[in-house]
Length: 485
Image: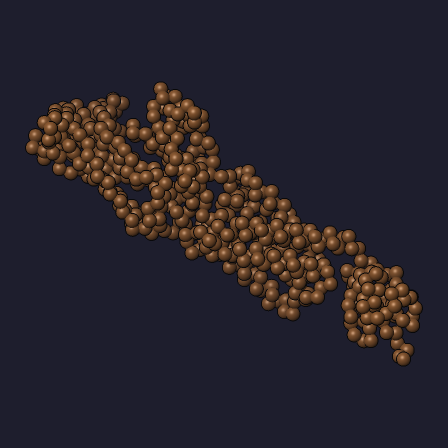
């Protein structure tokens, strides 16, 4: 029998864990006498053997009472590390999945995929935390936990900076602000412990982390700032009158056909959030133009029907009357790239009408689908302003006349915006009298028109919302002549 003891217990390491060697072979690590006895019992040692017997156990760096491990502290740190990593894992998946699965642009899908993958890596880091604050059977576990903490710090710092731009309340603040503080604590702890020591080539590991962070930053910047602004919108809108014809039933009217047309000639599909066509008849006061164009225009300013940006030498005191007005396209419907739509209408004019010209104006307001996703189902349901049962949208007819209000939630295609801003809604107001309003705001709609116009302008630009119009004008004399009147 060898004079060397069969069991050797090494000095405790920085965590209080003591290596156990039997017969020159490492058989495990122990944090306490109870763990050491279990380990020895599995190898045939007596259950109640004397651990202080130098013939059986050799203690190095302390005796059987030297167990500096504080299990409650170690387990608390491990639990806190895992909690922060798991919460961040779920949050990154919530941010990334809508973009990864439903974004229209490649860059936005890549951004979503990066967040989903980072969430998966955070899940691996949470598992690695079990090993790193456990028996450290895997050398890279500390480095994986460090990478996870860096990911949390980077993503939450980005979210906080985006939130700080407008500082609006959102429930997601209660996630990324605490986890941002958590990441600072976790990094300080991991750096202090030099958790990357177990990695075989720490310099290459650090270079890979930096390269991945730079690639992610460039992708986010491209998808958030450059790419949405890189593709301008182009529309082809037309509105024209056709050849009029006389009423077949010998009524004193002529029928005037009207053709309206639009085509998405740009490279981005859009939502049509509001549209209107309006036909107006013009009555004017004619003169011989004494005094010249400028004098005529200057004298007309302030009079009813005058237009500040329009001057005619022989025409003054313009008065417009709405003859026909209507919808052109269904609100909330999308217009894909290259898609076109035409509508034909007929309106009536009396043969002895006093108008000298008739004009038509076609307007549409749209929102780019690569910037936002509209809740079309709710948006398409109109709210009548005269409906007293709909208190959120009711307005006395004596004040508002008759208006239809369309309202629905909109989410930005870059989900980073959604989690750092209050919810936004698209509002469209339409009436045959010519009321044509489209706005995007976080505020509830009110008929007084009072709102945060600065916010509305920012949101319209952010979601790529704009207007397009076309118009046409024809003399009544030409229409009557084409009808043979």
